[in-house]
Amino acid sequence: NIPFKKKEKSNIIIVRGERMKLEKLLNNIEYTLIKGSLDIAVTELYYDSRIRYLFFGGLTTLVNIVVFGILEGPLGIDYKISNFFSVAIAICFAFVVNKLYVFQSKSKTFGDTVQEFIKFVLGRLVTMVVEVGGVPFCVELLGQPKMVAKIETQVIVVIVNYFISKLFVFKSGSEQDK
Image 1 (tube, one colour):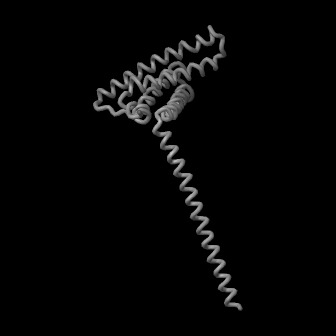
Image 2 (cartoon, rainbow, N blue to C red):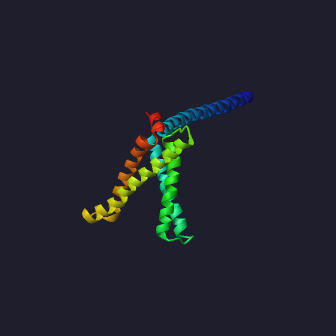
Image 3 (tube, one colour):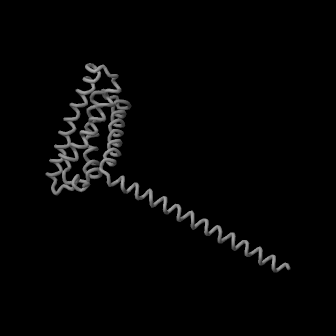
């Protein structure tokens, strides 16, 4: 009687062990499926230049704000000068990440890269005119609140910058997205 109970008890342990192994296996399969789905979703997002543009545009905005805060705050540089340099640094940062990661442009020569940079800066100057003129236009002529006008012009600027970069600056990289 006693050996039978021990055997029965050991079988229960084995069954429980197998059950635990089975649960672990099922959890691993479920994790793999979920992870695989996430990997596919992230991969699809990565291959969409619009998503990359928004992500790196957010980083560019962060660079702009942080540089402005450091220059104007602890370093005590006048806010107008701080703003100029923070925008200039942000434009350079935006060029690099747009070229390498957003539009994945492959320049053959240094001259090609310089040409892209000049087009990029000229495009940013065009949209800067839209932004600098658009906010006062919306506030003074349309009577909109300042922040609403700022947000509206930012949306327009972001969209126009994307198309300028895609169609005129990084042509070779944008063709890869098709």
